[in-house]
Image 1 (cartoon, rainbow over the protein chains, first blue to last red):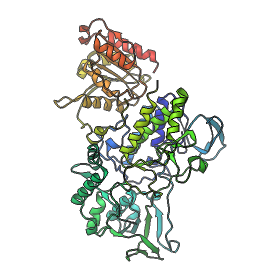
Image 2: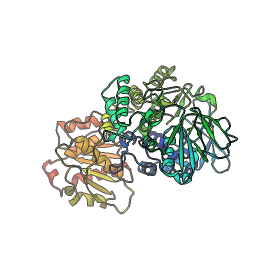
Image 3: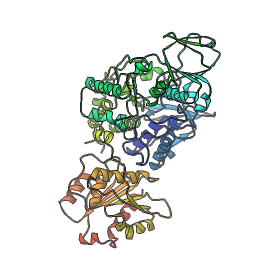
Image 4: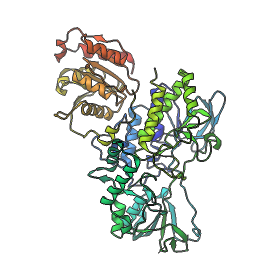
Length: 431
Length: 185
């Protein structure tokens, strides 16, 4: 196991449950990965809250407490993972402060894994029967280059180093990026900063957190359960947004250039509210930076003293040779298995339109059963593996999601879980 | 058959409701905690709780929410909520109606072990989650046979059904605790 974040912990628990001996390597000194505010690679900021509600976010076999709100704070999430870890006794299997530097295939589908203490020390090399990678994909900042940004004299920072709204107070802030982080920071800037521009490349759908008095994702899932076709669901969603949030172009925002479900959902009730109060000025894509100014492709000019790049993160596997996972972007069956290495699996490399952890739970259940089946019934395992060949390019979403760098591992939770359910049924229950 | 797509749990989650929990904590926490279900918590509280704690098992008796619109799903939810709130993976013990709730809870929570006393006639279609040693006990009958087949274990026969209603009769509890001791949890 590489990583003791949300995915790594689920993998340790589920592999242990299937009788495997597990060593989990974690470069930090605590669990929680990105959800642990203290970790230097953590993307969370002081105000981070969940954007999917509890039932679609909790591990299916370890519910969040009844007295928690619909959308808990990131600190509650960390305490949830701490409790999960202690409840299932996972901590003793984690080697904290240990970094994995390389993972190489050796004979018999085994792996040579090199580890070293994260803060210097000598390397050790070990051999394992299988490797599960859960190093997360929201820690390596993606920083696009903008023309003229070297000349810009104001401060530029990536959202990964944004901590709390105190750093915005009284400043003139430009937020670039309309992801969930970008929208959150724009809202905080609206509350704290002297001025706020919000630059987006295109128009987006901004889903509110509540519709009809219920968490929006639960309402969405009720509609999903009716089995309506995608086009009708998209129409219903557009209609609901039009009636509740309203016409975005009236607020000076751009008309979405795609249908809903075709990009990663943005859940933010407050963004449009603050645009309506004039506290956020929506602007187009950045055309060029000057020494004091930023020009946008819609002709507006801003004079910010702080620019926050909420331009997202890129997955990185620096300990794996690039060809192990196939082309770039990686070609993984079910976003988990590499084509030529049946004992290498990736957990959590998905961007669902729901909470992440239920999907990861079933992913790691599938990995555990797969590894069990390989030794228990090699013939069936070989048949399943043969069937999987050629499916590595499958995308697990019904909508036409663009294959951009941001979206190649975007999945629809229902489609993806159906795929996992099929695989789990195919593999059967372990004896 | 395994069920991954649980749409009802997602779009219509069980509403939180108050529940009664009575606990008796063991001096040491070597053994896993026990969650008892089936009778009003007071029934267990009188004798079973303290006896289990004496033998080293922290014990929590749950009375799920009452109400006309309460079904097995809600009751199992209450049991799982209590089990998941404990510091360690819990052992679930259900008696009579409680055996039905525990059987349902086992499809949602990977218990450390489970004991069903006088199990119900119909058992959930979904499989048990995790690897759970199960003990099925009761007086002979079709329900007992069916339950032991369902969990793939041989049933433990208890002599006198009427005595099970006597709170002071500790024999089944002692038997379950002996079984738990033998599992070396």
